[in-house]
Image 1 (cartoon, rainbow, N blue to C red):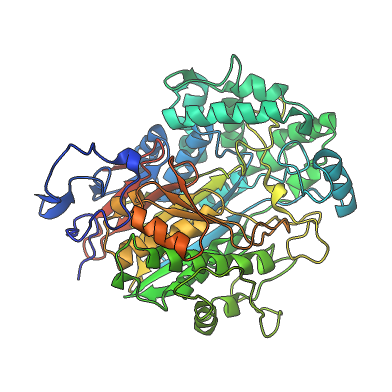
Image 2 (cartoon, helix red, strand yellow):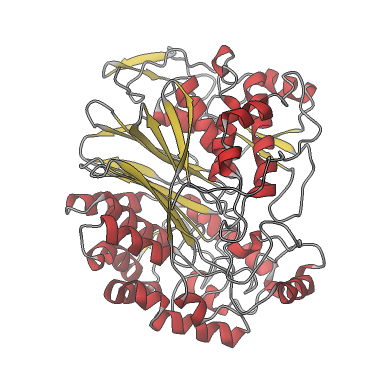
Length: 605
């Protein structure tokens, strides 16, 4: 049977399920039938979905910034592959959405290649400086944020080698069609000529400026960042913003390749900047960097649907662990917005994240017992710990039979996905981590360095403990889903620890409740925080269950009676940013959806 979520009948949707957040709902006085037939399908009129999914035959792009989506489509129309288009969009959005990403950060991707008929995973995360040991890190961090408070989020201490540019060239060398100077040309043009700032990004620019100004003592300098992004204050929505320094950096990369960034002029400029401010990241750290092709892991959920994620040092397998727990209960026996469904998703998250805090780290230093963590038997064992009537006061991690795994395979963030006429689909996520990053913009380069190293632990013996040359635990995770062994959906949901929770909720919305692709993202979300952490700075064991406006009051009351610490959040800032593309298994037609809580748009042709 053909899978067409964009045109599937969704008459079963009702406000008793996860309705869209209150801000997207029509006024109470607006009366309309629950659905209205459009194009042979059912289109809800009311709170169930914010806009129609986008349907197109030849290509699709969904990003968090409309101009970046258009850049991707333009590249596809010029004969570029989905990888070419994804790189072009990523470069553009790094310029246009510097609050979440840029070439000072890291990148992860999952690519479906129709020629070889397989998924490829790319880990483009950078490593800690080779020249700073853990005792130096502890002493310097404690001097800034105090003993036992981890690594500060700003300044040079949390900076790790940016992996994005190398990841671009790894993908391009294997799957690109156009020359890199053509791929980067749109971003270079926008950087030099300017573009109008979009509303949500303008808000985050204001937020980040306030954050930096409140924490200036953590940073060695802020003048470059102020001159690059905040001259005259944060830009407002509609204001034309340009970044000629970044345009020049992009041009150096387009002409000189990845060597320009890691072994040439750019690496030497960053080295000189770090020496000037007293930071440790060096030319040698850049020259030693390389991305890693990895094998995605997949979990069969139900009805032929499988979720696929990348292995640690990211948290993607947390989503797989959640699905491996949830497949032991038929969620569809309850309405989507019921306390039972939210309870099971929340408890599954808490169980999975205890394992994340215990096992997930750079596998070159501390491999995790992945086969065991994703086994059906372990999923059943963890599911048995869930009391259907009440929230557990505390969970802990599992205990593997032997912690000697055998691997079978060779804050703030942006997520984007692109698909082309050949059937290639790219799931790409890229980030500077918290906020805009470290607050440090190297002289003359126009981009901010990431603060991903904040996520290291400083506890001796912890798998994620800081070490020179080590990759920190990562929150950013692209996702992919298969149907009956065929490529079906490229998707992601940005936003720190929200990401695995969001991936699981999207899968539940689509598979268990038959929502269309846009409605699945619009539906109000949960975001649980608390419990153990990969930084060894643990939260309350019970944690807080944050619910987006749109969850029924009766559900909230029942969850509190079950022992959950529930907090209603009226804005969408902590619930991530979703983009998705599905491919019809029979016709190859694409459907795209995008996050209504962001500025983005899905475009097809």
